[in-house]
Length: 113
Length: 114
Image (cartoon, rainbow over all chains, first blue to last red; front, side):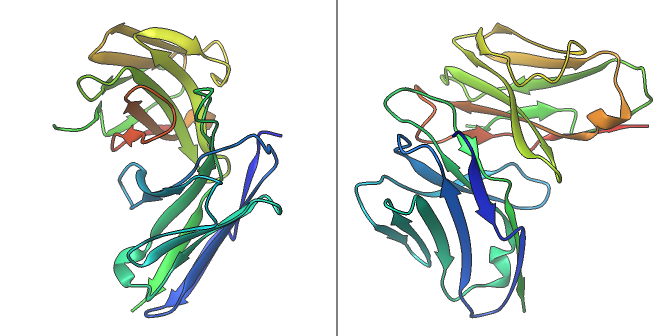
């Protein structure tokens, strides 16, 4: 019940294309879904996050789409750039209970120049 | 703020040796986390502290691993004796007030056990 399943494991996208990473969770009590971005040799850093009371959140070229009934959420990167090449982790947690953050296993994204 | 500071950045050691990884969290943050990252298992939470007190160490793989936080500005993760399967990148992270919001990660300590 505590798992967050992330796919694909790796992704190659042409510059200017749309990168899509999908995640699914099991615990319907989760109420906070952050995405972390990790560049080689660095630690992960918060990219964008969503609460389940909205179906979409957009910040620049990054959009989270959330489907509560399907228990799925996804990250879309529009107009993907070589600088977006990184590992992306989705995650889920319970805000009010101050519970652990459960991370997906990550997606290695490579944007071709 | 300088962010979360970890040392050493790289450590190469031989099987059986003791390894100590160090972390200085962001000043004022009351949560500190130790994670391990491998290709196979992704990011694994090893242990976390709240106000210097260990709260959950259920992720510590075995008794060879131990962690301490003697004060609000310093934590160590020790592996004794080290084994080749401990080779990974170990991250320290800190946060303010809660799990949710934002975890601030250090740049990691890459451990290679020969």
